[in-house]
Length: 367
Ligand code: AN7
Figure 1 (cartoon, rainbow, N blue to C red):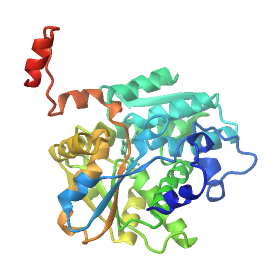
Figure 2 (cartoon, rainbow, N blue to C red):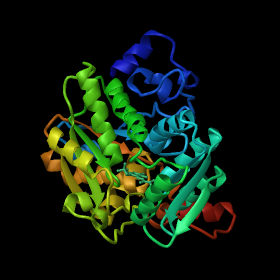
Figure 3 (cartoon, protein in one colour):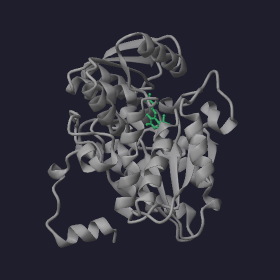
């Protein structure tokens, strides 16, 4: 039993309503003060879900857990960084924020900025943002600019905008983003009672892998865990600059969230790999979709394709996992973000246009 479950066994079960959001929960670990206006949607405290079907494909006593960050308020891990970035922007008196996004950053930026009373401008690659994410940015009240160009082009424009105009950049070059995101590593250690042996994570701009590594290191220095994980970062084969070691001019993948050719956190991610004895690997779109179906169909966990890259990568490297190891795969976003991908990629029995009668239904069911 995990230490957290043991602790809950002794007292009354905590109500989710008690969770104050990650800034209050981890205040002493974060660069906030009494003067910081905390903009929160009670993000964080996402479940660490056992994944027996994934573990069974590896065998040898390996245990696998899924850090399901798709259960954050806007459906992705970006909320962890955005509660910090928007709170600090508001503290600094800023009135508008801007970001480039493959979708999830724009949804989170819009939600937190509007909740804090700030304007939110988001630049997205026209035609390459999943429907759910676009819907969120619009409903949360962002001002959405779709450009005829990819994420990397959008990011360079917003960086210049923030340097020239009174708008605060909330992409992961904003240091408060990674500060907020490091709390996911704290939660993993708090739930397991130790650091995992392997941490498997998808990489786009490589902010999240850098944030996790910072979090694990800080917890280890404070004596909260006695070991550190190997950081295993995965990219889609058509969009794998960190695996290839050079910028990809025209990144392509079904996992549009990580369709990024020139990651801004390259140096931090390379340091995380080197310091942790980790590795980077690419996974094909076919391998991503196979993991996506396995997670949905056997684990009951619906994530978006980019997130499934962490499990695809783990399975691709299964032979290298030490016997008895504890592995955590980060599921960065909710499957509902990308319904088009779900409808196009499943093995479900879907019978349509049926006569509404009992014999027809029973017949289809095989009775
Ligand atoms: C589901 O929203 O870059 O390596 O603009 O949405 O920290 O970039 C999203 C990235 C993984 C990669 N999984 O994280 C954006 C954006 C999902 C994501 C990543 C993203 P980083």
